[in-house]
Image (cartoon, rainbow, N blue to C red; front, side, top):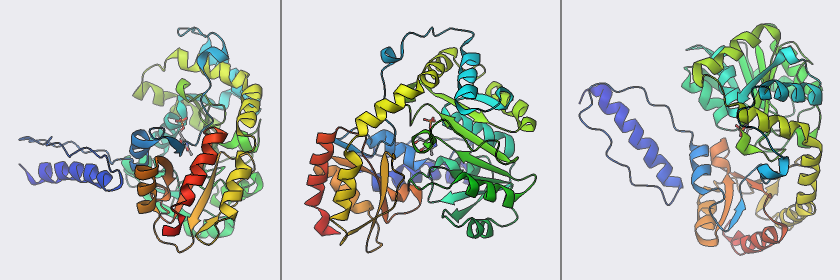
Length: 386
Ligand SMILES: Cc1ncc(COP(=O)(O)O)c(C=O)c1O
């Protein structure tokens, strides 16, 4: 085996083993490397997503899934999977709801597809990209996989401090707002200050997948000339299965962003956009549904955190958030405890480790209220270990 082939294959094993350290039911690394001569570059693992696929929703108590409980297709009505008008209908619905120009919109397969398209267009090998920390792993993994030099900056409320950390090099800066995982929100004025601070020819990409919960019917798009936004029907509307996402971008980027689809999936399935249109058109009741489903749960979680301040510090989250961020008071990693709690109590919580903040956890409360109460009660028995 050549050195290149060997090192590449070992990298793959390492990533599988690396996951094994956090996931107790990790598969044994398979011996996939035969007498290979050519070793193609291996995409780095996205540990958070692999962990989520393996564990979220797979235990008795799911305090990890961060989106509204999925609505069923039948509740949205009927949509033809081959409707050729669906794509346009989807864009009309978005333009109307968020008051953004049709010409600025690019449909995509989820916010994930939108993120990839933006990075594919703006990231060249060796380019510098700045991404918030803590942060949702794909926000930095995707630029990294496209060859960017990724720098991280602490996500905070002080825009001047963030700009100082970002420095002069990055051409693209990526944030989520509301922030995953802390559920803190920068105001549009702050985002505009950040965009203006970057200045001409440097882009601010804002991932708005949680925004409808904090500021319905709105987007920061258009408030500064160098802002790009991405969004989808996944998190706030409870329609993750449609894979209906979109980009809102300044005019000079739109043609390239639209071309991305031809380079990846060819033509995205019209059915995705048909369901996306149905979701955005019916967003008002879908959001009301979430409010009803969530009633009383946040107070319960806040009271639980407040009762355990000896071990835990709760962060401020926006009022309608579906999750809160909690840190361990002594600053040590919460991962071993979260692993034990998952294995022994059947409670899955999203480890801060995957967001770059091992001392924290993102506790979601999208499960039923009774189950939430039971999970919080069970967790109490283990808090003495922290
Ligand atoms: C900040 C953020 N952006 C994007 C996504 C992915 O969204 P979608 O399901 O629309 O691809 C997620 C999902 O967890 C997320 O938390």
